[in-house]
Structure formats: C-alpha cells, structure tokens
Amino acid sequence: MRKILLTIFLSFSISFLFGQVNSQNNSLEQINKRPLMGWSSWNVYNLDINATKIEKQAKALVDLGLRDLGYQFVNIDDGFWAGRDKNDNLIINRDRFPKGLKPLVDMIKSYHLHPGIYSDAGVMSCGSIWGGDLNGINVGLHGHLEQDAELYFNELGFEYIKIDYCGAGDELNLDTEKQYISLIKGINQISRHPVIVNICRWAYPGNWARGLANAWRISYDITPNWDRIKYIIDKNLYLSAYASSQGFNDMDMLELGMGMTNNEEEVHMGMWSIMSSPLIIGCDLTKINDSSLKLLKNKTLISINQDKLARQAKVVQHKGETYVLVKDIEKIRGNKRAVALYNPSDKKQKITVSLADLGYELQNSKDEIKVFDAIKEYREKSLKNDLSISLEPRSIKVYILEGNRGSKQGNYEAEWAFISNYNDLPKSDRTKAPVYKKDSLASGQMIVGNAGGENNFISWDEVYTEKSGKYIVEIYYRPNPLRTKFFLGVNGAIHSSEFLSKKMDNQEFNKKSIAVNMKKGFNRVKLSSISNLLPDIDRISIYRASE
Ligand code: GLA
Image (tube, rainbow, N blue to C red; front, side):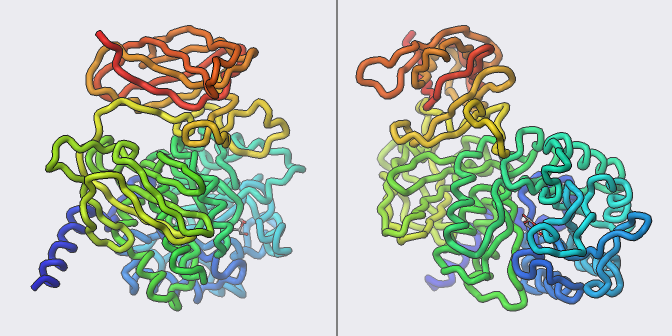
C-alpha cells in the first residue's frame, strides 16, 4: 500500500510540477525560446558519419522515448561534404550518403523529428583545419551564402544550422559580429521556413547575438573527461545575465554515455539543465547504458532546463571550492526555485547555505520549505533551517525548493549584472575590456572590472522591492583615482555622483550610499559613466530608507 501511495504521489508531483515536458507539437519559433534538445553526430562519430548511422540514432530517439521528452533535433555535424563542383555548388559525400541528404531529411521528418545541419562562417570546415579533411576545403558559407542556404533550407529542408568559425581564419580578416549578423539575416531571408541557428564561436560573442540565435557556444570543444566538464561549467558560472528566451549560453553537446562516472554524469546533466544549456545528446543511443539513459530521461531535470522563464541559474554562494546556484522557475520571484549544490573538488565537502541566501524566509513556526531531489526524483524531508549536506568529490545535488519567498531587500552581486558591451572574444588588449573577475575579498569572490565608458553600462534589471518609496542604494567598489565620476540610474531617473578616490579605513571595498525612489516590484538599476571607466564593483545593496 505504501508503495502504491508513493507511486501515486510521485507521479502526481512529477506531472504537477512538469506538465509541459512534451513539446512535440510546438512551432520552431516556440522551440527556439527554450534551450534546444536533440542528438548530434559529432561527439560520437566525428567525421566518420553516414546515412545508416544517423538513421539508427533518429530511430533510437523515438524508440527510447527521448523524442517525446523533447529531444527532437537530429543534427548532422561536420563530415557530409565532398567539396564544391565547378559552379561552386556543394557536393554531398556520396560514399557516406549514397542517395544524398534529402531521403535522410525526409526520414527524420517522418519520425516527427527536426533535421539539423552544420556549416562555417568562413570558407573552410573545422574538420579540414583540425582533422586534415580534404572534403571540407572551401565548403563554408562565406561567399556562398545564397546557393548554400537555398540548398540546405529550401531544397533539403533543414530546420537548424550550427555555424562554426574555424574556417574564418585570420587571413579573411572578418569581424565576428558583422559576419554572423549578415549570414543569419541572409539565411532568414532566403529560407522559406524558420531556421534555428547556433553560433559556434567558442566564446561569449556579445549581446548582438541575443535574438539572432538559439544559443552561442562559450568555450572550445567538450570531451568526455572531467577536467573539460569542470572547465566549461567554470566558463558559464557568471554569464547568467545573458541567457533568456532570446538565446542561451551553449555549454556544448552532451557526453553522457561516453564513459564518465555516474557522479560526473550527474554533474554534467545537472549543470547543463540548471544553467539552461542546450541538451544535445552526443553518444551512440543504440548502445547507451541504463544509468546514462535514465539521466537523459530525467523529467525533473528536463523541466528545469526547459522552464518557461528561460533563466540561467546564478551563483548565490561560493565558499572554498564549492558553489550554490539558484534558478527561478515557473514564476519570477515565485515560490519555486531550482537549486544546485556543486562540489567540483576532488575531496568530500560539506556545503551549508542559509534559507535567506536561497531566497526563502520562514514566517511562522509551522512554515517549512519543501524539498524535491531532482536527480533521484524523490521528495525529501522539508527544511526548517539551513540547507546542509555532504557532497562526494565531483558531485552535485539538484533540488526544487518550494516555500515562501523572503521579502528582505538584499544584495545584488556585480557578477549577476548585465554589461552592455561584454564579450569574451579574443582581444589584443584586455586591460580595458569589461570583465567578470575573481577577487577573493569580494562577496561571492567576484567583481566586475572595466564597466563604464561609452556604451558599456552595467545593470541589474530585477531589483525587487515590496513597496514603492525611498530606498538607499549602496554601491561597493574598490577606489581608483582615475575612475571616480559615475551615474546611478533607477528606472531611468539619473543621479550624477562621484566615488572616493582613496580607500576608506579598514575596508576592502568602499561603500557609496545614494537615496533613490523605487517602485513596487521590479526596478532597473544601472551604473554608467562617460569619459572614465568605472572602478571595480563588488555588489550593490538595497534597503528601505527610514521615513
Ligand atoms: C568544431 C566545433 C565542434 C564540431 C567540430 C566539427 O570543433 O566546435 O562542435 O562541430 O568543429 O569539425
């Protein structure tokens, strides 16, 4: 009886929490507002692809129930070309695809899956550069956009394209932003149906990409290896301000089922989910082991990843080597939040985080915070106090918490803020580029450096207050004699002010307090300057001014 009740309870809570996992009938425009889900040929096959292999994986997506959980794209990556003919038309590799790509695309669509393809923003394929693949010479989109887009989208019917950048080498002297914008706009004009785009530039490319692509890669390639997983997570910890339904930070295709330990795979799937990365499977699904498949099919993690708010979790605590991340789900500042406790170290670690730092507040002695273990899909004992657990080396816990949100105004870390001119592209001079930077003395151990100057403001767009009225904004900054003048904007009202040029006694960060008016609910707080840059900013803190 207990078992039956538990089963009813579990299926109830899962379907109650996650009604809309199956997005099979969504239009491409709707799908584009969530991290993309599917399978791609690269991680398992590299260049060694063919029609039979891809057909088998498409069938497996259906047979294993993955399509119905949202994994709907079948993406053919590098390796399908055989150069261009004398009229510069692309040639499809007939050894690998004897009937060309059209029958494969039709078969993929007949399974109610979406076909995806791959190209390059320059002239060469990545395989030709890194893998010596002679078939990938001169196959990129640069200079051939019209005929290639006509082929991929109108003749063959692909619905997604990943656009790499290996072949846009120095000699072409391309500007990343201009090149991608012109290619993507061109594709949208030429294609007779919507096309979802992935920008594969190996670095956060800049805010221009938002609204143009479903996602943009933030690092070089993933491998099924712990150090690389950890490296990619690190790259994404402080990019939460840039993820939204306008596009996501792509942590690269999944390596589940490719030989990592179960704990490592839980970190991989857990972090990709809570950080709203695309979930593109990269293993041979006909041979996948049960535990990897179970993780890929975890409805709770998928629902966290596909949540309609399209937020990326932000770091609310970083102590020692451990992290706590939080993501609002279902409703902004609603009662439910997804939380990850992450131990990337090679030692067992205890993590304790207060309810206040998780955003909750108990209002009376009966109050409690409900806890649902997202990986085990199991309801745990409710919380009345700090959340505290011991984590094995290289492991994670992901929870969905539910309870009353705290009403106290609080801290807004600089590392959560949006910087209007931020990108992570290679630069010759990094000394003046805006940056999220480690600083062991800062709260959260991070600061924002080099914000300010023309078109380079920093903003917190969801500063929440319970009531309208007078508030104090405190800005914590590290003084710099050349960086004193600044503006504080609150919902468009501008306060002109100056930071001190010297350090105050016994303080690591100086504090500047400014009285402002705030409205009830969400406010936009912005720091900017004109001729000088801003000093290093640790955080802002907001509280109600006494009447
Ligand atoms: C680059 C990309 C990979 C893959 C290969 C193909 O390295 O980052 O994801 O597409 O090219 O050659």
